[in-house]
Length: 230
Ligand code: HEM
Image (cartoon, rainbow, N blue to C red; front, side, top):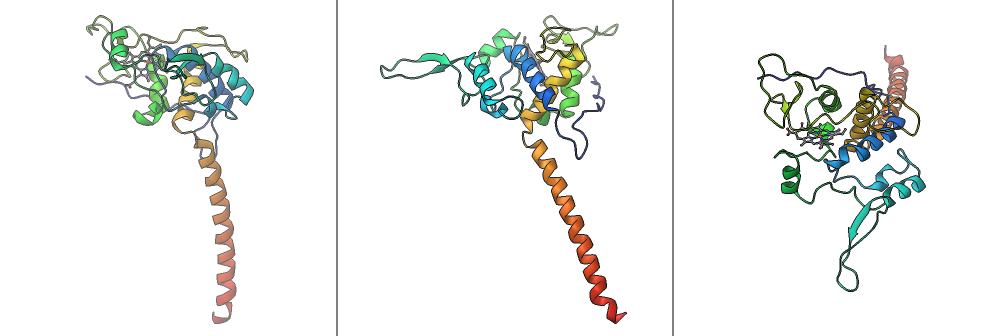
């Protein structure tokens, strides 16, 4: 069985000199937090990582404090829960893989920290999975508890469609259509997997500028040096 190859979408960050869309990172984190985080961990991410990327320090402290984090042992040797802090990592939806599989018909929702780097097709693939659900074509059987999605290897996926129009409300008033939600969460996931994306391109720009100047200088110098011998 063949699965469909995702198309190349015109992401705002695709150009050699283009940064990630940080308003989209901010909306995408809302999508992750309110939808995907119910099943998918992001072990590599801590609240502090989003400070000065998509949120102010105060905003992020407020968001972190909404999570209940297990800590301890205290002086009496007891574990306890407390509101989250900037230094905490994102909470895990399940205590371990067995619990995750038990809650998802045996399938394991992979950690999303590096998903756009780990999967062929990157953010095009993730966008296609999220928006690619459809009825199976005539003659194709899909097992109970699975959903037809032509972009997933094997075409049957254990994840139910996660996104619906207006499933969350954006604080900036952006209409929360399925494609908008998918675009934003993919931009957020791209940032999570490549937090140095913008710095890397800015560095590239500096390097090209400097090399161009050096090339011009050495060309001038070479002509100058050799002019008496020609
Ligand atoms: C698989 C993303 C929400 C449960 C996947 C995959 C992606 C993904 C990209 C495919 C991974 C691969 O190639 O191996 C997302 C995003 C979500 C979201 C971005 C939010 C917008 C959810 C929710 C649940 C869930 C809410 C649980 C109710 C699963 C499971 C799998 C999966 C069980 C494994 C499917 C299989 O192996 O057949 N998810 N997901 N996901 N997701 Fe999600």
